[in-house]
Length: 251
Length: 322
Image 1 (tube, rainbow over the protein chains, first blue to last red):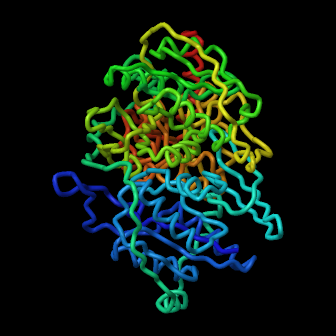
Image 2 (cartoon, rainbow over the protein chains, first blue to last red):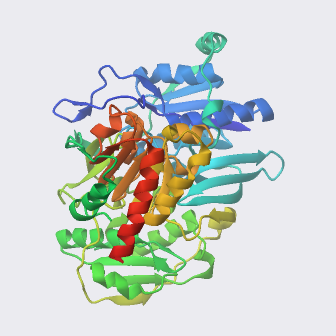
């Protein structure tokens, strides 16, 4: 099975978010970039398929040269090859079209992308990619088993509001992954050997195709600062109930 | 041209987000000087959408579509877009809808702005305000395509009374059999309990509760309030609670009216994930816990003493107010 894991290069979850150039751009100053957490769960599941079912795992991202350390990290975790599509990832529709081209050229059986990136929160790339490729798609996937035989049967579990749904389908398939595909404790930190090997692995740069851009983020703003908390004495709980009822009007 | 809204239902009953999406669609339709049309799937009481400004319903009644199927629903909605010459499509933010919309957007080659929190700021160009950076910021996003898709955040725009005459039209779209190459085998869903996505109130527990055996009081508090239960990331990672309850930047976002955080210190990722909630209450032993700086109301105290008292007082309050 040939797997492509699509990776987004995002600010670390602990980052404080600031904007620059008159609030038109995300301020990358002092920000640590990482593999998007939803993608990392997918990558780890892909490594499982590599080890247990002999799959080949490639990773791809749309980005400028500055994203290469994140691709190298994915190689150090164990991916076999990386592909960088040399363009600024302007919006989900644009990115999905670029990735579709890579998937077509690479003949992948399974594509795993995170259900959303934690920076721009589009949550649209996996579904658009599946549609452009006209293949099956499972979003918010928290369980994935594949029997590699003539039928290539897939059992996927997806998270729904208030529970989960089990789906049966076949390859080829695009998955929107998240935590649950593997556990947090199964995520891998690259070791020294992995880092050394990653230096020798192929990181192919391809030029983008002409594509539609659906949306454009023109300006950003930070949330308004929160007012001061009203503290209630732990012996006067009825005061809290009164505030919630009469002031906040939420109960 | 028109504005089309997908109004989501479950077992025939419209979800709360359907009325919010309908209200938003009416607002956009007014700005564009056109009407708002809804598409419904096996829904009862289609007339009720007229309360929120919907003047026409395309009513789909189809056995094959009784179970949600993202690709099939997207195909039907695409046909409705074409039939009504819709230029703006309004959708909600449920898990099913977020599964379906990218399929629709790719089919229509439409720009899609998700997590939108307010009416469009401008129509020409079409610009909306949405959350970004996992609620640590907002983006003002311009949609450039001919057909535009707007995903409305839960509990953001609200339901707006705007009664209009409504016409119900039966709509029989072509059903694309290839959609059913993906089969639903089993749905395992909590019945009769509020979910994090839909609940007005969410009660959430953190590591301060010391162990899964102590969740009884969290569940009891949630029951008294008719709330959904949630938890912090460490709690889900430790396996004390199921992953589905994890709220925060890498878990589920919360946009409830009231969020009660018990024994949660308030890591930046957690605060981001719950920041869309309107009122936040924190109960924590540590007065220096970062959550106190993000909350509206707080009690510094031991959850094991405070929560049982709170349950008792709330029961008294409910008894007097119902």
